[in-house]
Image (cartoon, rainbow, N blue to C red; front, side, top):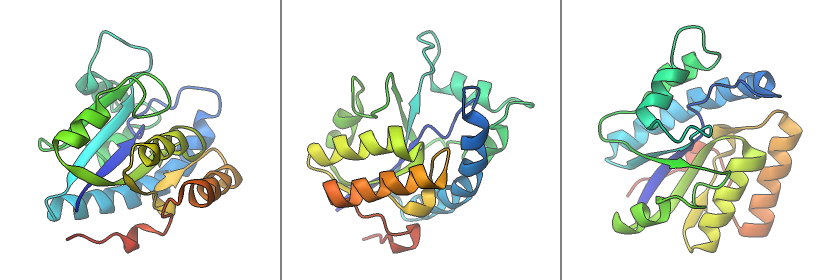
Length: 180
């Protein structure tokens, strides 16, 4: 079964209310996402960046990476750690869900992806609704609990429990991910 790693909103300026708390929580998750990203690449898996466009309809993904990765930007260390490679894909999303008003589903169907590993931020908003929408579209979904973050651990844990209980999302750690 073809699977894809969706890296959601980790290329981020963290310049919003609660951004500093989210950044602190995102750093440990980013290290685990980077390890998972390497595993996907080593196993010829698909890596897709699903990123907010921060209401900038003039720029593209490369512009967002350049802006958020500049020296002095709060999340520049995460951008350096999770830098996209030439083989990676990207989808810009206008709202919380990676699927709403974006070409994500079309991309995944064209590449015959059936299983999604969703990681990134924030567990209680963009990850939650992206996992929900993936489930509603018939994808098998895993959200490794060690690869997501929210402003607080309580918010992350509530979101993960909801995904597991309501949508049968696999929330085991990234170590449980297998490649075929």
